[in-house]
Amino acid sequence: MAVLGTTQIAVAVAEYVSTTRFVQELVHNEVSSDQESLESVEMLADVAHLLLAINVAVTDIFFMYRCYVVWGCQRRVLVLPALLMLATLAAAIMVSLTDNIPAVVIPCGLAAATNIVLTTLTAGRILWISRQSANAGLAQPYQGRYSRAIRIILESGAIYCVAVIFLLIAGSQNNLEVFDIGYAVGQQAVNIIPTFTLVYVGLQDTRDNPPASNRKHWTV
Image 1 (cartoon, rainbow, N blue to C red):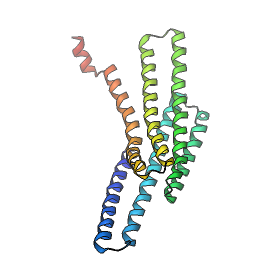
Image 2: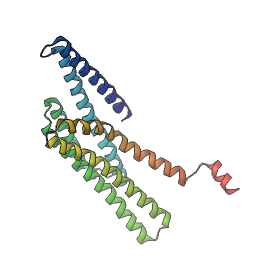
Image 3: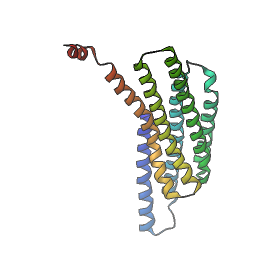
């Protein structure tokens, strides 16, 4: 995700530079179009769309792996999410090649459905385990961890889904300005959300299980 995010930024900067150069040439030369510059801008835009499609697929794989682990490595649970993820990737690639903004509602809708299914499966499984643990009389700290895990999953899923729905609405309205803003935010949101989950869990684990040297210091 870090490599894809960095590449997306580089492609976006190159696209902005090419677009600015094309506009300058268009104004100074007073011609209707510059074919070479225009093709460069279009090529970079297509590359940006493809990178976003791949990035969304990688993010979905991350969420699928999380769901797979929570369900005790049961592969059958991933059948529906995997089909939705592949459909999202295929639809996103097709839309990126056609540059049809209204058609973006298809991959956005599929991406939202994938996220909702994965979030429901993962959070629902942890909720079921939490209730079973409570019935077994486990200690309160375990229940706190279950609640924290459910909260993290729901928060990350909600943020991801809101970003996708924003793109879906902008695409359905055929509003190029709003779509471009949402597209720029969505490019990095698909990286920030999973990274936020990893960092948050790591910080909480460090707080719950401090290094041995710190524990000794606290004991003294």
